[in-house]
Length: 322
Image 1 (cartoon, rainbow, N blue to C red):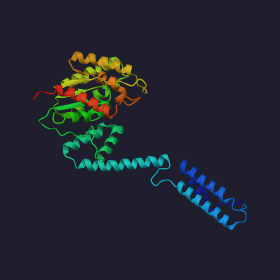
Image 2: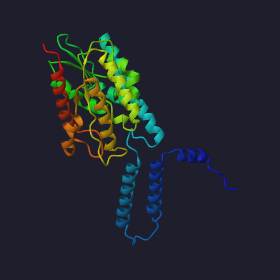
Image 3: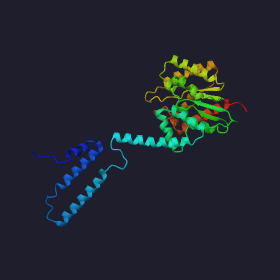
Image 4: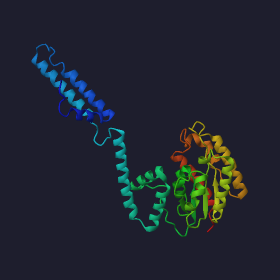
């Protein structure tokens, strides 16, 4: 019986644990070696120089292939390694973020803690990366100028997209805050409104719910909007309702007819309550081809600047006269 070389089982097991891409590289390398060096005994015409040149070229090609077969340093070779690398990167970012947060004033630390509790598994990692990199975001802490009125923006990712533009347009005229999350639909609003309002006094609240409510039954949507509008009015702030922006006709799982229907319901609710409407739907619709991302409800950078300018204009008109 042929004996098994010592350590061959371990070698085989080790090969099976390699990633698919790495196993393929090694098989290619082995096949090249066999095909190239298995023919060494073939006739080369008896020319020693020709044989030497042929052998040198073989070794050069083999060296190049072996170099190409080695994965880049730090590059994961399978899903498990990729997951581990991602976890390590997120841990490193979180450590830097926590160190940054620890050096902040107490009131700003409290805001950052609220964000950590509200932003969720999608937005929180993005926010941490942004802050570690020193970037400005829509959710940045706003230190109020006591001489200026306070404005609160409530809305989904469309609202988040135009927040910085509104803040820039109203610089020196108002303290522009936004709710500490992607506010989503009315169901989330009913649960989170006390957190978003906080303990401070608001002069103007610009709010919207709609895209995340597109499949919510009409009766539920109307009832929820009435409840939310009533709670916001109780703050004493001037309210501005923003209609939901159009949905692309060819977007995945998006149908603009849903948005039209929800905007009609919202308009009826706001009219009955005397809340002015910032009709962003009608405002932006003629420029969708230029400003909206294809097959997506979101907008490009210019689109958010245009929306932000419109929102700032409406808020400015509602601010208390000095």
